[in-house]
Length: 147
Image (cartoon, rainbow, N blue to C red):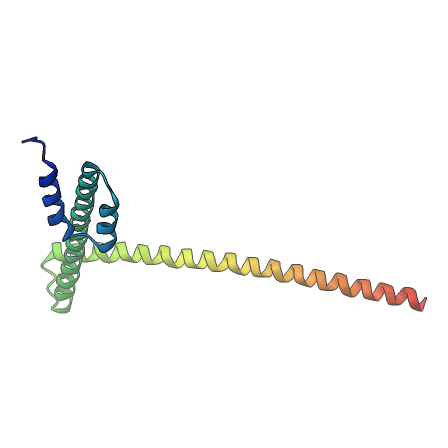
């Protein structure tokens, strides 16, 4: 199955692959003069596209599972069907995980806000001290003049 493809076969295969590529990718490939290198690059682009789609499908599947758990859990709670313990536990675990993420997000936001406030305070303190030094100098100059 490892039969070498001819130059024409590679070019035909790339024409088919080009349909999946962006304009920039096609332009890049057309700029590659070596047919073997162009073919390998096209294969790499195809692999990236396929892996990206696979990753998107897996992410979408994960979201659909979460969404289903949310809807089933809400349905159990709304209709007071406490007998479906697995659905309620899945819903509860999902809520707990998001609750933890929310707490972490709020804590991180508060930490960042605290740091910004401390930096502002330090900056204002430096400005205040610089202004005080200027006033002290003016006062001292005037006191010397007045004797």
